Every structure is written in structure tokens, then in C-alpha cells.
Image (cartoon, rainbow, N blue to C red; front, side, top):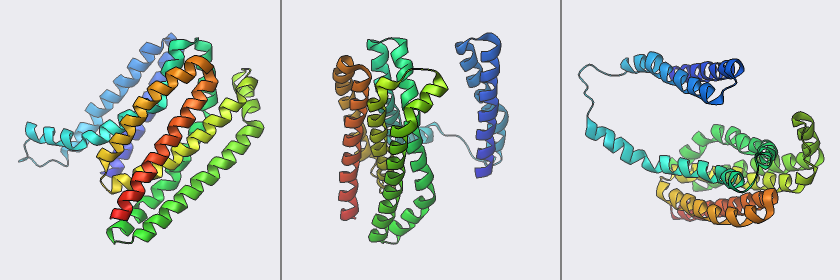
Length: 272
């Protein structure tokens, strides 16, 4: 079933993005292009996903509404944590859009692009080690879990430091060349955002450990606290310091986010 899921995601990606680009080029209408992307994904669900799912359902099985309610209830914390994390990462963009011009919004969008490489690398490092962490925990080898977590953190930290150094040396000139935009004044903000995303990348390993420990409610408390904090901090700092305020906001929130998750993770691993 996993390879069928892979085929489904591949079809949605290729057809969805392809239809989006094609319609955008033909009509120059973003709303219509996004509508086609959503429609393409919906059609694949109907045409491909439902047909594949039928092969895994026995004829005597019945869909029970109360079972669906149980599924939604059981998965609520995963949804809530994912939703809040997306909100935390995007909230400064909304504040910039509220206070400043589209030009400032565009500059912010440019300087944050390289930072997204760090959490992407984090996933690349974490994914192959997840099974090892889970097996060590189930076997009661807590020290092995700590060693694997340390290994992940060192890889992410090392990559983050190298990325920050490269960003400091050539990041802004490269972005200026690609986007034909003067970004010289944003160099410090750019570096601060890179450092903030190092903490975000490190925090991802803690999310994996807490999920393994089934501590989803504890994750939610960190996420909701971080969401409330970023609303307050972003409106104060961004409103007064523009893009530099955005950099400060990301740094403060990601440091808080990382250390909150780290403290909780250490507590429950020690307790286990």
C-alpha cells in the first residue's frame, strides 16, 4: 500500500503543479491556477485513490460514523500541533502584510528562502534514524536513544553553522543576482533568520522523540504558548523595526520553541 500512496502523491504533484503552471501562463490568473491545482488533486482522489482503497476493504465491512468520530478524536492532537506550527512559521508574514507594503513582503519572502534548507536537511537526517530511535526505546536502551538524538543534533548544528557562514559570505549577493533586488541592508536580518532556523531544525528532533513517547498534549502546550508569544512579539517588533523586527521575532520564538521542547523531552526520557 505504501508504493500506491507514493504513486498517488507523485500524480498529485506532477498533474497539480503542471496544471497550475499551465493555467497561470495561459490566463495569468493565480486564483484560477490554484483552483485547477485543487481540482486536479480532487480528481486524483476520486479516480485513483478511491479505486485503490477498495482493494483493501472487505465486502462485509461497514463504515460506522462513530468510528470516524473516534479517528478524529484520536488524531486531533496531531492536527492541532501541525496547524499551530504552520501558523507560527507564517505569522510574521501576516504582520508584515498588515503593517507594510508588498515590496517589504517580497523582500522578506526572498531572504527567508535559504533558511528553509535547514529544516529540510533536518528531515533528511532524522528520517533514516527514526526506526533506530524507536527500536532502542522499545528495547529500553535509553542511553542509545540519547546518543542517536545527540548524533542528529550535531549533524543539524554542523550543517546550520556551515549554511550560516556561506550565507554570510555569499548569501545576499547570490539572492540579489537571482531576484534582481537590492538586499544589502538586509544582511544582518538574513543571518539572524538563518540562526533562528537552526533552532527550528534542532527542535524537529525533539518533536520526533515526544511523538515516540506519545506526548502529543505536551507538544500542544508548547505550540499554543509559542503561537500566543509570536503574536505578541511580532506585533511589537515588526511594527517598530520592519524586517529586522521579523528576524528578531523568529529568533526569539525559535529559541523558546527549541528549549521548551528540549526541557520536556529530557524530563520524560529521564522519567521513562
